[in-house]
Length: 343
Image (cartoon, rainbow, N blue to C red):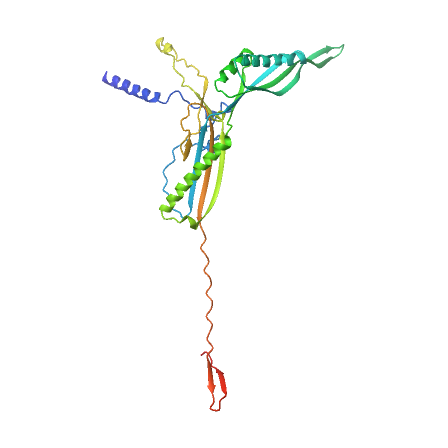
């Protein structure tokens, strides 16, 4: 009995520990959805945003007289404008009927939203307008003739709805559903003061560079004796770029256990969640606390300080060999100059 109790206790402990993992079972590696951001280091856009699925092993640092300065900055900002895109597909027997039905749907959506005080903008993107054909069979005495004849038309358009208040999205969904428009293509996020945000990141990066140079100077490096090489990059990620998928764990039916029948597994639907760029590896993070999907702006700066080449030593001028001379004065007054040999 003690052995059974101990085994049961161990199993319960394992179950409780596993529960901290939640229902997450990443299916992104199976490419089940097109917008999945693969959570492995060698696939998807993980390499671009610096995602690292495994902890980096500690490596001994290699000293060098070349100073490499790599700085990364990230700015989390809520969107100031949104655009929701809905696809509408309408069919009709005639071209006029098809276009009229499409207009009725769009006008119904506009009327309902304006009736609720919606102040956004609407735009229509024409996708296609094509006739639909069927085969008409004409029987003759010794043969049959198959002829394509138009039986209707298909009109496809995208309705773009721009808004500023995030709370208006529920109104938009309700109005579209009332008009039997359910195909939400995407929601784009925009920021008005984009230049000001990048300028703020540049200022913060320059402050970090100044601190690093002071640090190098304190270590004994004379920064005036180094040539600097630089490279920089910036990027802009919208929330739709960072949704991942997972499937909840398949649970065993308790009824099957009670009735002592075969195990019945319940198929779970694919779920999605927003997984923004992780803050690890960044030197600067602005608005680190994220409570909803945001736009993530980044700027990276790399500086390489290389010692300046040594100044060339000026050549020493050759020493001129002396040319001794002897002045001979005769008793009568004339002076005779004699050149002596160097040896």
